[in-house]
Length: 511
Image (cartoon, rainbow, N blue to C red; front, side):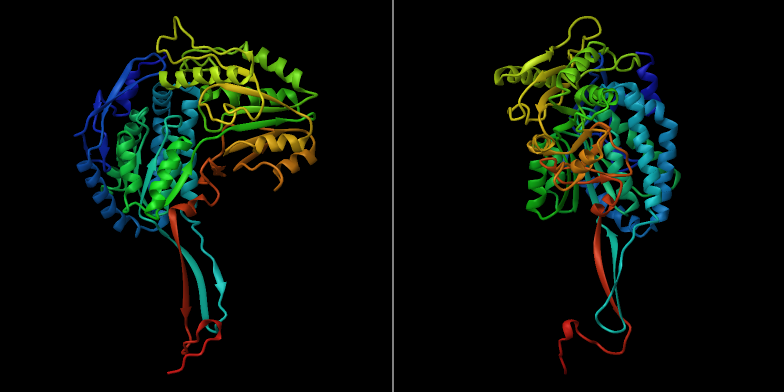
């Protein structure tokens, strides 16, 4: 590792033992302790206390109180607070990016890139704070005006996953703040120190502007704390990122109380490689999509659906490229692939390899758990490639690991059917220089995913577009475009400036 992690933790205000509950500047630590170990080297980084029910109730009370004043702050002024947060992130980008990489295990470049996403969404939210538009409609009644406006929802609960331990929180909270909401964040128990660091950074903004407790809150713990949020009628919106199984439980709990949920769940993303594809750019997009973040992105490339005329050539090029991958410490910028998040993830990877063989798949590049010098944490695996059929049970299941499936097709309709034949619907791509193929893929008869790309891979997204997917991916949208509407409530208004009271639809009611 090329830096001293203790120096980084000190810069971010992360201590050996950290209070895991916060309402902004104030913190408390009454619960049991979570220990955070790095998948990079297996060493203990630090500890965080979990949130007790008593602490949770205090957080809710502070949040509800803060909302009363925060909602009345003009949106552009709320945007100014987010702008200041973005500037703080610029100052802390190097340190926070290194913590993300060390605690989660992604490459240092990806760690810095994740913090840049936070900065970008802050910039986007600042502009958005002056663009929370409603509509004006013509009334059927004379001397009446109709319009709609958007109001803040209230307390927003955010449950995030380990693979993007800071960016996904910021996608939600930066938008929610400019919309006038206050936020309670439960980070993944696998990356709790990233949550502590972010809370510390925003606490500086709260202090500089003398803002009340409750605008930015933090809770920590396991599934139980997530259930408190999901079942709490005082929280009108829960935004949850994670597995489909987790999202089903969250969605069910929130729906039972008729709340709103924004779910960003699993993906099973495919690239269709047509006979007209540029194979040089295709190779880059496919390999990075499959092995980046060790295959632990929800947008990671899981399947390559390859035209039969190009199949053998693509397979050969991929095998050669995989032979050149360097696996090891992600903080060493010479390495391409880092570790999985923990040994449980490694076991899931190994189970998937067994299922591939059992269902009849053939390995092109064999996978295995790596041992020896540099792999002491037990979290490193070898990215692998398997030839399969699209209807294998394991192929239809998202495995959060660097496993890439190769599937052969004859015509584009067959390829699109394969692309859409899995339960998930997050990201998709087609590689082609043929305009007709590209447009068909993007048409209503094409990809059924929330993201559909042409001549770029499935992995990664810019914050300007709405991020999310269909089917078992959950249907939620975060980040850009008009995703802000999920954090607000729509109100239709009719104003009568006449001296009469005409009723709609011409109804007569004389007294």
